[in-house]
Length: 559
Image (cartoon, rainbow, N blue to C red; front, side, top):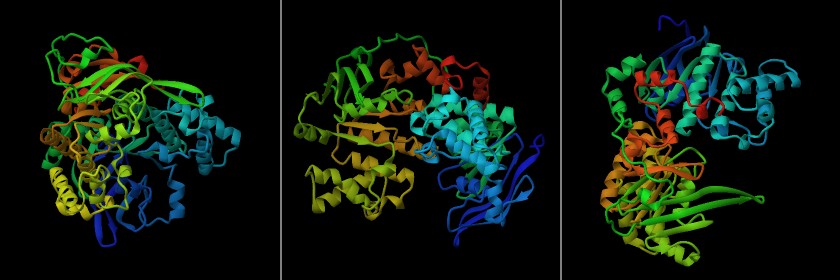
């Protein structure tokens, strides 16, 4: 770090909750204009270390040691003085932009409030500066969108607004806490490009917190690896990926799902929208799911929005079909339509030989015993007031499949099938880690031994090592229970690892489909190639090479 003057200097940082030490002796340095990535699993202390820089530790936490920001000591400084540093010396970009923005205020008003909090400035001048900041982060038509509300923006645009808010005080250090975790690969690539561009233009240093090692390879100069509150190793990004010193780092790197590294031999490209596009040529047993020429239309305030158009696919027994595409492509709508949760405007959905179109509620409820859904936000799908045994056993009770001692025995068996102890049945969701809660969601989905499982982004919020464990578990459960699956994800590397075939969706249309090895190894459509190109490779050399190549116009900043 000799070429960078030190801006942030953390020495022997200790964070305790009462007598429990959660960050132990951490030392991190960030130079001016440098990007340092802080990586590790959930609970490793990454976010607490970053929040300590701004004096924003949660209630009950106490910090010791030294944190110097541009020569100013943070630890021990009264909160009234820290307020003057927040936003001007250092600012934070949070993981979830939706919760960071006020839904009832225009984005220009929120930026203006941040500007006026830092220095005296008139309303007209604040509005002008807000437009300049929106321009800086490449929001299209900033003079118009300054008057928009957060719900009128896409996920990537909301994240750009949060970055604009963070830049309003012209900070020397930007702390980005998982800013791309919930974003599609193309939007994620745009945000990473934006951060690199802003750093080049403003010289802002970045402390980037993430569990995505592909993102680390694309953006970081140096990497600090944390585990259980301690520093495991600190290396340049190139050295860390080519020659990790510690077993823990090697374990993290080995857990990263990857895409094919070479282009396969040319393969035939199937016709779009043809049911045979995703059906094996050889004779197969009756499919679990058959969708033919499906269209779905949403109607809101007398306006129509076509979410799916002329979509056709089949899912064979025990087969995993990956659904990929950007937000708004129709992935989740397709999954929910397959379960009979969303009605079809046209076309046909046949589930286990039964046509869903026009099916009554009673018949549909009986059919749903053989299908299940795993939600993206597993925390929200589990009632925090009920035990895990209650959550897992609920489908068995609703469908009168078990009760009493038999119910308790089946719940115990399901817990063991997802590699959790039987006595976890008495625990509540808050007592479990994110990966454990995802295992509980799988156990609940498998309670009635479904023939079709719809998994909607089930690993998007998980650490790379926990994600690997859940994917391995998913593979084992598929072998044990024999279910077929529609696996929805914006992570193409996960689909490459888990799926047999893939369907690529764009704006409600099937762009391309076929075996994963063929579609990802030799994509026949430009849109698929752009999706694959946007995935950050866990390789600094490849990531930098991709960065230097000109972006496709459709994915340019502000598109």
